[in-house]
Length: 292
Ligand code: GUN
Image (tube, rainbow, N blue to C red; front, side, top):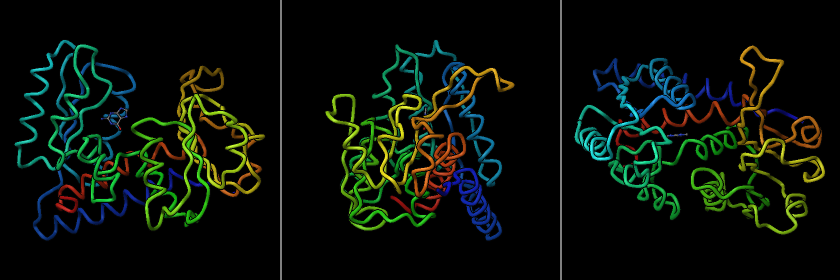
């Protein structure tokens, strides 16, 4: 069994981006600029946005944080989105989710100029990704694709079982891995809460992508000897063994599954760290007008 090290890989990606940004600046080019809109004070969102801004600083991007209280109206938020759409200095921006209940996430996502949608959530980007056209791909699927590439994991002709059909992970992963070319050319099965005989389906997988958000859902009896297992789960559970009193648990029962795998991503330190690296990659692409 070998470990797919997302922490080290994400650091490599960030180092590569930092080197490229230094070159752009040396040549007198414009510093890539990522903006983030954060509404309210949700603990998880605060942590994610702070990490995104810190990563921008590391690679030499300019970053801006626009904060609103959770009493902000949809109109006010949409006006800010429009302002960022029209701000020539901003290459890409994100609206951190979730938003308060009185604001439609769909409306806000749709209002972002798809050419600045470095989260890859806009229907234009989702649609273009689905037909294999250049698009911003959302952070988690792109991070997984990057890990597969960098670890040279064979996907052609393999049976990939994706557990979970969310718009931001399961569904895009199934599309990307069934596309022509590498990493792709796989035969993909998408499983979900209504799937019959889930254990047997998983047992036939060469690659399992677990993205259901149920801690330790994937057990050893569901995994074929030599399979590759990618764990997207990050559920916070109480723990008396950590300083914070919490620990992250993946969707895979790691201790029993890992010995059967050829490759496996740990939690933490697997897919998670790759998501910020992907956001930075998208922002650099936006700055270089590489997608649109
Ligand atoms: N909330 C949880 N993950 C994400 C993400 O990748 N982007 C945004 N904008 N919000 C999130």
